[in-house]
Length: 351
Image (tube, rainbow, N blue to C red; front, side):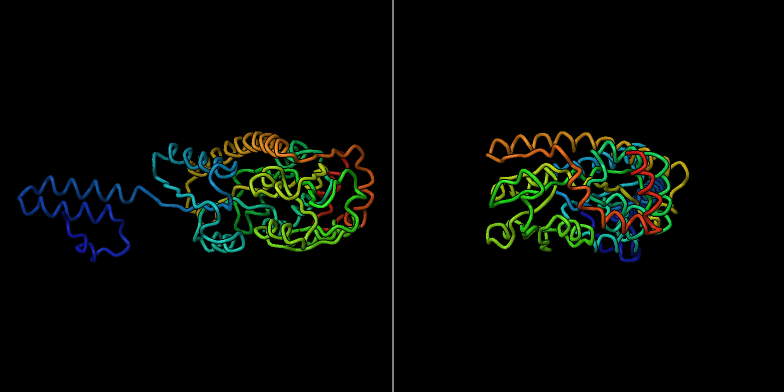
């Protein structure tokens, strides 16, 4: 067995390099100089050839985002013949999204999947995609993101350190309540509805005549159980995965928010890649986005079937005009904002 403390003279070198160095020393002592030199050369080439990278997301194993990122990693590994070894840290084990954003900009992580909140800070035009009742479904949203508008937003994000490799599906969000059936907009009036810390979400709930209550996502189930909130909102997959359906069995399928997420790499990594390697990353990112959307649709269908089996009652929205009229002040605010006006006019003008 080798004593790897002999590698102390090579700080920062991979363990593989140290091990081959010590093995070569053994053959030198035995007089096999040519073999020792061969081992040293091969070990050094192997050590230099591999570049370890770190990837982050906030979701557990099996979740569409995680599975799509695994596919991306496999594609990059195969296309670069193992040059880039990407380790995936799922379930926010390296920290929450805010910390991950800072780590990406600092080059401490190289690849990440973010929702639109931090991305909107870097590309204000993306805020248009966070407005309620704007899109009919995900396909409607991707019509813009997969086209010229998405390319333009990606260029803006790149200038802020995010290189977009693929647009992911954030899902359609709907309201669900614990204390009474909700079948129409007026049923939400007076309800205490949990929202994330977002100006748009808070204003949306107020305009619907309800009371927004900002609660950390991991505390929503406890809020229902303690009676500090009456309703919450989210997509179908998360509604099922978190167990919220067990205490809030009335869902109004209003799809009030349909927003994107994105697979990004750090510009620090991007600047180090060759033109050929950039093409590899881009192709792998686009393929992972297609896979993620397919997995998301399947997961949403399965989640709805599972919660329905457990007794959840769904109500479809037949007429969205009352909801849209209520959102008029919110639309006006963003229509008059130069940062979001162009995107909103383009989307609304093609409804």
